[in-house]
Length: 178
Image (cartoon, rainbow, N blue to C red; front, side, top):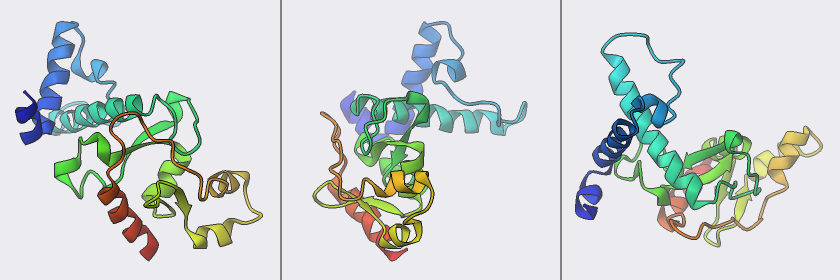
């Protein structure tokens, strides 16, 4: 089974979510906690979009549970505000889409900063905030200060599925160019 998962993790993730939903007599979109309010009501695109979201739900569960449902930067433990953030975006690296080592559990604000290249993780697993963001946000909004306060803070690492250093280096290199 591990060999099969390693070969095609997306197919196995979808299949496992589908089987669990069937076993529990629950619609797949409900079991996988798929957000459906922006999906088309009918049409051929609905299934494809739902499949993607089921896989994303699988990734989210693995990443958030690895970090004990706490933001790895701030320690925030409000699941509704936590994001399973891809280090290398879903669209850029199909081989690592479901790899929990390609994920960080971040609160929504730090997730946005990470995605926009305003934040990255250094080789020593410390949070790094872009100097341009630091300069632009000094004395500004409380929210900006909440991001910048964590510059050089140690990342809260999970017990399993620690982030892949090579993926973090790739993200950091792109972020530093911004």
